[in-house]
Amino acid sequence: MIANRRVFMMTVAATGAGAVLLQPAHAQATLDVKDPQAVALGYVVDTAKADAKKYPKHSADQTCSNCALYQGKAGDAAAPCTLFAGKLVPGKAWCSAWVKKA
Image 1 (cartoon, one colour):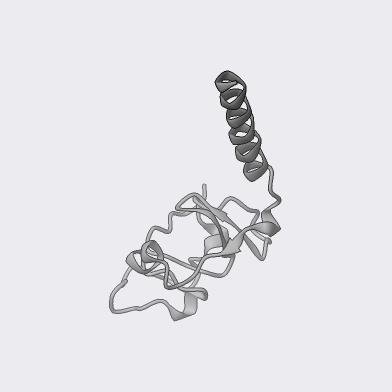
Image 2 (image 1 turned 45 degrees about the vertical axis):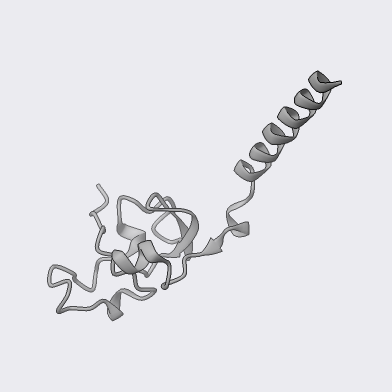
């Protein structure tokens, strides 16, 4: 009886984890500017609103869509970012971790 329960629980756990991995991108939430990691990185939804005094190396042409960490294509409105697992970031957003896409 205990072995059956253990197998059942392992099956449920494995199936649940697989379902999370197979969710389409549109099911993900957009990154909140109040997220602690977003705040720490100076994340803004629009690159034009980046704090120029705090981030003097920022330039208006730096956007998530042309960052090496952005998981989408340059024309995507939003896509996942390797820094913010499970969240979408707008293509025109920016954070201080921006790295020029090769």
